[in-house]
Amino acid sequence: MSALVVYESMFGSTRDVAHAVADGLRETVPVRVVEVGALLAEPGGTAVPEEVGLLVVGGPTHAFGMSRESTRASAAREARTGAEALVSRHVGIREWLDVVRMPAHTLLVATFDTRLRRPNLPGSAARSAERALRHRGAVPAVDARSFEVLGMADGLAEGELAAAQEWGRLLAGTLPASR
Ligand SMILES: Cc1cc2nc3c(=O)[nH]c(=O)nc-3n(C[C@H](O)[C@H](O)[C@H](O)COP(=O)(O)O)c2cc1C
Image (cartoon, rainbow, N blue to C red; front, side, top):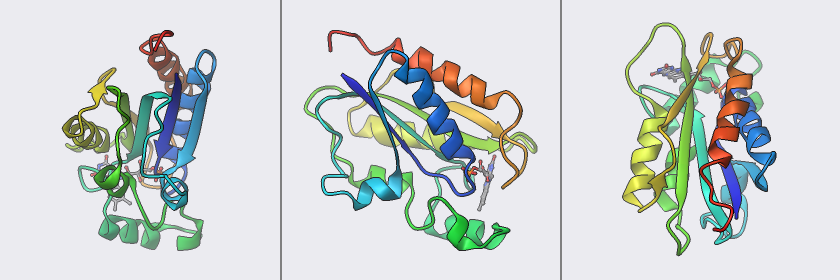
């Protein structure tokens, strides 16, 4: 079975984490990594394919949880290079999780987010996404995981990409080869 990594990102940090996680997974598992807006624009993009055994979902923490239209608009105002430079301007993982259809088998899931190192605020997009997936009958393979950024649009803290790749390797180990 394969893994599917679906991510949302405003300034690129969560995108970079998603690709690092996919790199870790890819050492042993076939993996597809896709931005959530691109996935939603695909025919069938709201259904998790049957051959997917592990779904990984990641997004930036906005206002203590998953982004909303209003927080993405705030991010657009923050963007130094203009809204067109945002990776996921129009849709986020919250909107995808609202409409996603699960495969017939029990789906293993893992969620991650990016969040500020300082201040250490409560709330996590990863935990909110995990809750949404549990409600749809999916089973978390590991605890929701946060990766730290140095500022709203200032990039990842040192070591986080390597940690993300390692987390991807760990995730690959939760996927039984026989599934
Ligand atoms: C509107 C907005 C709200 C945010 N709220 C939070 C928050 O509640 N907690 C937090 O740790 N970081 C918060 N952040 C910082 C984001 O988590 C950070 O911009 C993100 O991790 C960067 O990832 P990206 O480059 O993939 O967009 C917020 C950022 C924006 C733009």
